[in-house]
Length: 66
Image (cartoon, rainbow, N blue to C red; front, side, top):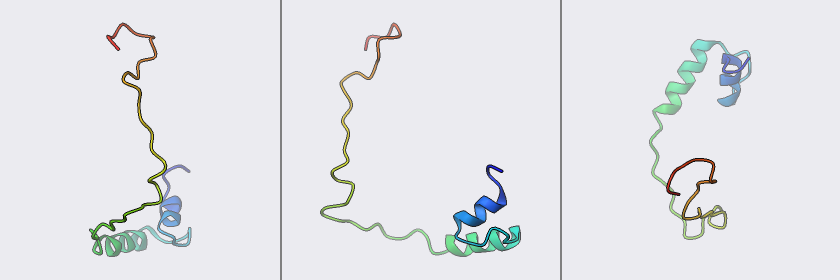
């Protein structure tokens, strides 16, 4: 059941049988704590995972100028 309330409950780390009303209340409670201030780091864990695109990303399958 893609997009089910069961999946929503699990995404909120709640038991899968949590009633919808309780899920909505929990979501609202968590929403009140946001936004949080961003955490800035000098050396974030994703810093080494960079990707640079070529000048053109066209694969040549169309008639663009790329």
